[in-house]
Amino acid sequence: MFWAAHLLAGLAVVLAWPAPVVLSRAKWPARAPFTAMILWQAIALAGGLSIIGAMLVWGLDPLGDNLLEALGQLGDIAFTNQPAGTLGLLHVFALSAAGLLTAHLVFTLLLTYAKIRGQRKRHRDMLNLLSSPAVNRPRTLVINYPTPVAYCLPGGARSVTVLSDGLLNLLTAAELDAVLVHERAHLHQRHHLLLWAFAAWRAALPWLPTSQLAQKAVNELIEMLADDEALKQVREPDLARAIAIVASGSLRDPCGDYTPEDALVAVALTPGTLVGQDTGATVIRIQRLLAPQPALSVLQQAAALGTSGLLLGAPSLLLIAPWVLG
Image (cartoon, rainbow, N blue to C red; front, top):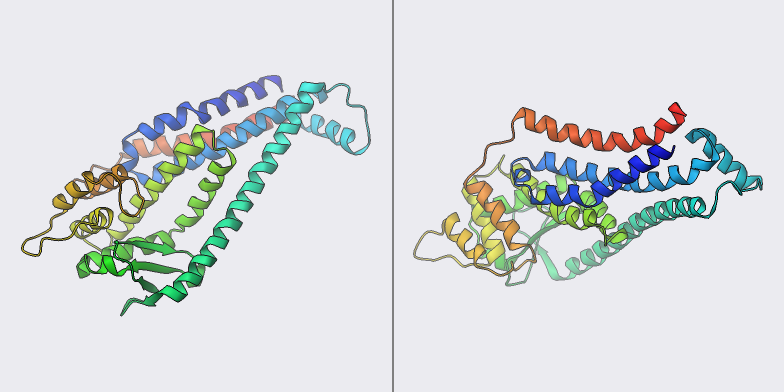
């Protein structure tokens, strides 16, 4: 099992630093956000499994020639008071670290979920007091706020889209439809679950480059996915203008047309968007609508998805191999 522990440790190091850094700097995810999302999930899951697996396998190494035998010996030590002299201090530390890290990840996941649920409940209670239903817009609420704001609040059958009256004063009917379709795409595709998982990953291991870069990338990718879903019902110029106006808060010229290019310039010149989003990410979203890039080829898609599959399968195979090969 010695070699499996070292391979798992090496894979954990690769997935903790160079792999997320390379993927975060790549340009192709904007051409295939769904594929990129799968790859980010594979990196996160495989990285966590590799870290825990490396410590587990190395800690069990003195207890048997294969994983099954070693786990049986560990059970005897834990539950039947068998002597643990064969383990040694470092191996006991590795097993303890594997157990503590697993418990930490699970606890953080549950704690993050509880925090998000509480925040959403308080938010919904405030909306009940401060918002009013939008006219002819089912499951849409309007708040009295001058800054352009649009977001969705998940809640199953109680999910709603929230708009500010400042936004309503800026958008045309077509652009408003684009905003609503975009926000509802977040709900239909359950992007809040992805955000929850990666927020928990970041909270559990804030020092890990994977968790930091993955959360930022996922936030950007879900916006692109919602944009792509919205384009099935709305026109690119309407969606591009809506994104730019929401981001920059720019008012229209009442005497002329407000083109997507005008709005793109307004966003690029804005130090930070009014809704707390990254300006650079917003510019990329608008650019991919105004000047669509060709989609990845079938071979490129297959390579990215195949890499995701290998990343997910490698830690499992390395954990099983010591049991099978002995």
